[in-house]
Image (cartoon, rainbow, N blue to C red; front, side):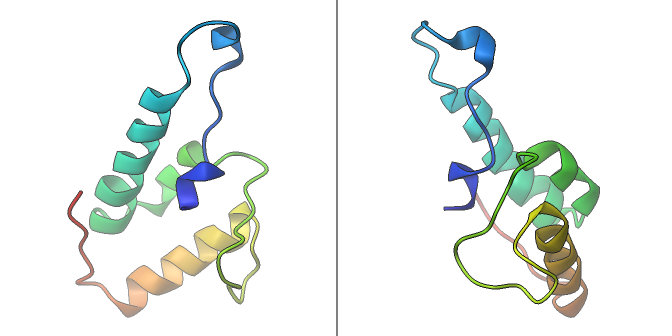
Length: 86
């Protein structure tokens, strides 16, 4: 899943019972609601971890954060009616 590499539990939560799942849920919802449904690819800069690397499939622009963003722009331009329900 994309979000296994997107968010990390905040460092200030180390040693607590907060496992970062709220941040992961927020990132997941932001990806589908803002990026996919809202076509707001600028949000990817906030959602994706700085060292993001896609291991799922090769995207022509590359598998790093910038390449994934370019791939999402291309996908959303090719399929402007794409929608996801979370």
